[in-house]
Length: 295
Image (cartoon, rainbow, N blue to C red; front, side, top):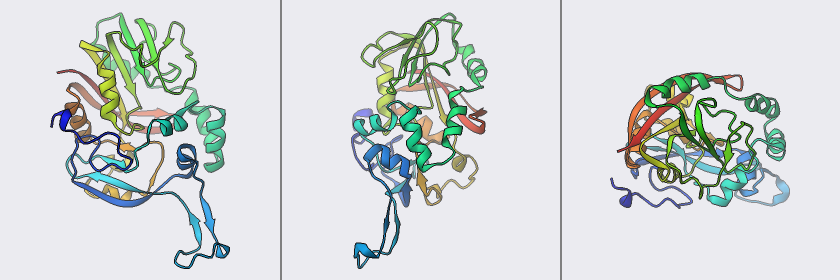
């Protein structure tokens, strides 16, 4: 499927797979977690009681409803709601800083402690560097797309240039790193990092298309996304939409097949792909590591 035939990328409710474009979708009812609904839309949960005077709706807590959607072609599992630009800004501006953390702690007691652990940085950067090193010639120029403060950027000591683009507006904490805008990300880099970003993005094909503008023929693009437990541990991956009952910040749950479909759609060839077991914020998790280049 050529990109020109790919379904529209600005739908409020996705009518096709955001990775492969298939319309062979299966859906099941789910709930949008209260923190996300509040942060993105200003919607708070509410209790329906007798004094509402509703005759056909039962009393109880009312939360924001949505659908879990699974692609019948590539297996991608995703939230049907696709946030627009202003809603994404509301979700991720000053990400994991004071206002964000206080609101999330209100809905999810214990988050503050978890956030402190996450802010200390990841401990598997050596694994990323080991994965990528065979495909690079040092020293390298790096763009970390969605790199937050740069704390988790690999190759901090073996680069000749380090640019960081992120919508969170947080200052960089790495000496020599430079925060840039999307407009100024025009250099042809040796390595572009897009780590733990695509699982948050309404239309991953759009962000990868933006990144491609900063790629040359020899540029390596590193994409890292979670291998979510519901995908990893379910042998019969045909009814994941029925099992996924709630959605939080991760609105895309990738499969091996959906990653390959997305990158093929974007005109990229995979040069290496593996699954890494890692620890972040005190929790063990599994990640897809993907290295790719332009066709």
